[in-house]
Length: 603
Image (cartoon, rainbow, N blue to C red):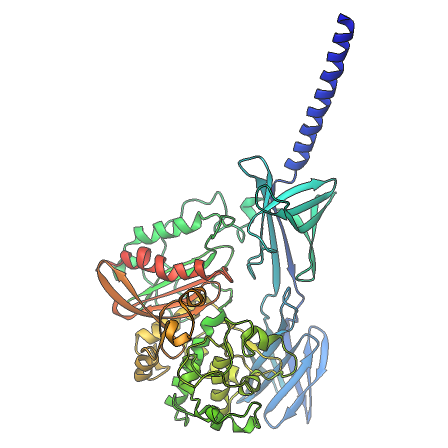
């Protein structure tokens, strides 16, 4: 009997040891997945030296060994390569124009951008310049670790679009060489979102993203080399305040203390932002923070791998440039003003669908205050003029014409409804009134006078400049607009817009509240913040130390902000990647500025 008991105990012990060994092996296998995995896909793009040659009446263009015939009509020049093209004209000895780049990896690839390109004459009948396209990349990170219960979890992050594949945090399980990423409340059957196959020699994760039509291979990434995932690379020395460098871009720089700001307060802010966990719930994903005070650039810091020479998607913040171009056009004597009747100026694109006598009453001011009455509401999925509806339809490639053809939904000037198509229509009015392609108008009235570096202007499918947002700009350049407005419309002695236009365009012209939007309190709170708008500027007030400071701002989805506080001679730029997370990026303006930046000013 004793031998039988001992034998049974031995078998049980063996089974237990085998079970524990299996669990240990499984745990070790799971542990092998822990870490940061990443993939970066860079779309091929035409770039390099572009040579334009004229022999008699024949022109040809050469780029990276490819040749293309050129269409020349008078002084105008146009040619197309597969994946890019040029639109410009002879300008004295040189050829000035725009490189037209296809763009949109992970977004269908159907966007196009125009960037300025100057070809210098190097010999008789020969011009040369360098094509530098906007970097078109898609980066994916998967950070796998264990939660406090020992369960494998993962965070998926994409900095270009803030794509998370549907969730902020995933439960991860492994079946042989397959990783399953699931989401679900405790006690419920989780929903499968993603799968990844473990590849070996070297170890990689092959992940399919069906929503984007991409299949990526992620390799393990040492945290110290993943600066674009973390706010700042782990292990970096604690941040110490530093004066921004003075470059050949027009900015005067100074130490913050020279303009009356407490550098220790700014240093503490940057240290706090540098230590943020990007996988934490509702984490701010700030890419840049710049501050100008008393006309000097005193703070310039970048995060998540971004830098001063990298143009950033400004989203709807670039809507404000339409207002600036209107001021510049009036200054140049163009017969246009906020009171100009839209359909009168745009009659050349008629006839218009949904004829309505009220359309004749729509003026430019109403487009700039989102109160035109057209059936256009970006916050309403059923609205025919919503930006997503306009950009996804294929019937009308000219988005200005698309907006003009919309039906009337309310009496012009009586309802506020955020409408990107309306701002783009205002841009079309400016283009028609000045007889200038929108990128050329922007370049002549804003970019060159403000000494902009590389920038990229969004185009619609018809090749017209899109004024509804999406221009890529450097942060230092966006901040220049704020400084020019602080100086009454002047940058380094050159007038950009009249001083009166600065005052008029940043004055309140419409209230944003449940009454003006026609929404109940709950729906209003889900779509808007109460406040006032100027002409494509959002107005607000900071209350700091019992004092109210009026401000105006250009704002864009994700946290693209230009904020101007005239009473403090203060201009601030944020760029960020919190796309679709207004509750997060709006805090940059409502909390960081009044709680951490303005208090640094010695008043």
